[in-house]
Image (cartoon, rainbow, N blue to C red; front, side, top):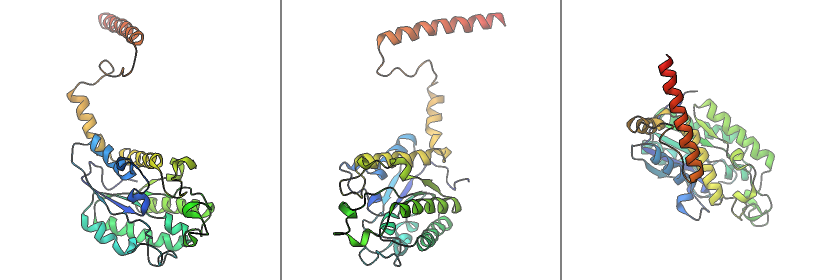
Length: 270
């Protein structure tokens, strides 16, 4: 699989629900979309503009069982205006948790997701990243049947099936996939006390995973790093040593002298 866009990136669009919106990250810089943007800006020369078009409490389409209770319009009803019209070269889409939580049949969800991703693919040259679902805590906070009956029509088997379905859509649509469930490892302490949203730690973990997926798939992200290596003659001899001690420095300096003598002797021998 060869991604459409190799980077660097200039126009990043974020689509999805409250997770992509950044909800429950206390520090804005910890929102996963901002973590991704910060790392991209660090490793590329080109400026990056971020269009966060995630909508809290949203679902993927009107046929989702949670549509009536959702924040409208659904992603299917708005993705053209909130994505394609913005002419992105990078699209990160994390839409599925509310659809899963409200019991949307996987077949319907996959059809809608494929429609959206295929259209973005056909009308832009963007690299598309799909973020999978992750574990929730049933019976608590936002997953309490007594207070949120619309959003508790799920179980952990359905969550895993959704995650697998998103992965397959990514493979079929020439997109990248981030396995949020694997990234978080089922650790409840990466969730907000509402048992649904990510906390700051969870956001940062997902953001770093998204960046890693992009950076290892888009060779253009390495251009700045390779230029810096060449311009500054970066080698093993002039790097490293942060937070080291004098004893380590002396040991390394002595080793360098020995390596230099060995290299000199080898040249003379040849």
